[in-house]
Image 1 (tube, rainbow, N blue to C red):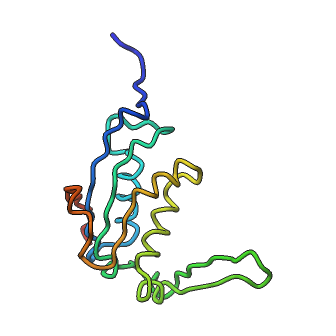
Image 2 (cartoon, rainbow, N blue to C red):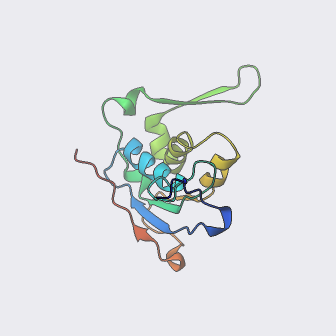
Length: 148
């Protein structure tokens, strides 16, 4: 009986491409599935300190929904670093003007906040519409389960 734990090496990681369609699905549900794929947690070869994740393409971010009253209450905040430099954008405005940024912020918040998380975030591609330029990578469709 072999009692050693498998640990993936950087050179032997195989990464695939997945497409997630965000139409009429909650922002957070899509973001958690994308973060899981980017980290590689869906694979049996998952290793926490190695980037074992896959590439993720998210389409139709303009059609994503926010459940409850978040569309009116949620506020995206960031600070420039200067005095009085806090910017606030309501979720309704963010989803109308820049839905890709709302999705990207949600996913990046679920990744590790270090160099590994930044490397995993580079494998993410987010589009507001249904067109993308990654057909050459032959991406597979990843279904987000939501019964709402």
